[in-house]
Amino acid sequence: MSLPHSIFRNESVLVPEYVPSTIPHRADQMKALEVYFQGVVEHSSRMSQSVLLWGPNGTGKTTLSRKLGASLEKKAVLYGNRVKFFHVNCRIDRSLQAILTKGLRFLGHDHPSRGFGFEELLQSFLDALTEDKVHVIVAFDEVDSLVTSDSSSLYTITRLRELSRDSQVFSSLLISKTLDYLKAVDLSTLSSLQWNEISLAPYSDEQLYDILFSRSQEAFSDGCIEEDSLQLAAEIASIYGDARYALDLIYRAGKMAEMAEAPAVMPEHVRRAKASLPPQFKKEELTYLGRHQRLILMAISNLLKKSDSAYVTIGEVEKSYDALCEDMGLAANHHTQLWNDVNELSRKGIIQTQISGKGMRGRTTMIGLSLVSAEQLVDELKGMVADVRG
Image (cartoon, rainbow, N blue to C red; front, side, top):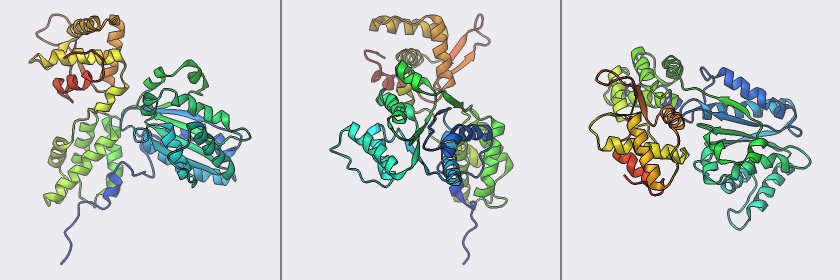
């Protein structure tokens, strides 16, 4: 008895951990990263580097990092140097102590997780690098989580490059969604950063289609996915510019096609997959916002919670925000700063904005929520902004 025909040839190609041989529409950024770290590869004992890589969810940050690491390790061997690339997710390991402990184990050195002070742990990490004659490049993925937990951590990271006395043994790649976390650090820390910065813009629907097409050639059996399905998935994901979301969408669509015993992934499978995906709003996004941005969100959600309308005007939001600030004894930001904060919240996808149309006098900015209910947002914000009331 023959096995049923599978939609997939290799479904692992669609998971977030997969590192493709080529990354469509990121060649320039990959080249820039390699150029920045070329000195470390060639002269690992005399050079160190720090680079900031940032962009919204699903713009290729982690994939670029992992591909960069493999490339740099191979290149270093050609120059007779030992370079190791250590990728850590700071949302999982939210303290430098946890990261350094994991780093020691990555290097093959045992270190107890308890009983040692931080400075001793730090010195053990540097001693291990010196002893092994290896230069480690640490990719601090979602470094904003680390800095939010401990604003002094970034200063310590910059110090690591200075603490090795005889040779350079440490470089860093700081990966984040935005550079907002730098607002929480002091001027001396900022001055110690080299400010080699690479930003990643959200993908367009055409770019997302190219990514999906490239992966689908490996992921699906011949003739098992319609071009219209790829196009639809790209168009849906382009709202967020998120390649990870696009890949998850097409993966789920493939699974639905398999369960239905369909011969190929059709657009209807993509639509069903979209309905099954959770909203893109993530509660942790709120932790990266400033207090006044949270107050603006509270004003928006309070208004929408009490209204039957899908949108409120920026004028209504400003009045509600001013009242919240007055209740809390805070000086409200002026209109220009409020406008900037609204634009920033819109750019991050937390709110939606549009210009008013028919039925309203003049033109004004309308503000709404589509990824989370106003009531849910009020509940989340209550615990994050002292004395805020819904």
